[in-house]
Length: 68
Image (cartoon, rainbow, N blue to C red):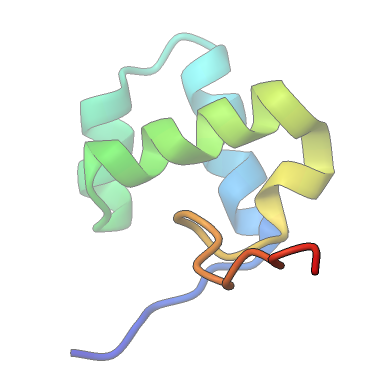
């Protein structure tokens, strides 16, 4: 399965629709994404603003440096 990516402007439009009172589920269905993805975008926007929407979703899987 291919990983879909979305432009920041696309994510922001979806977030703004929810902020204006549209439900998460209807917006997510219309865009063909899961509610979780839309909630992740909203949480990233609330936490970090535009910078939160530019990175890849999910945890950082890079190995931590050992400090040695």
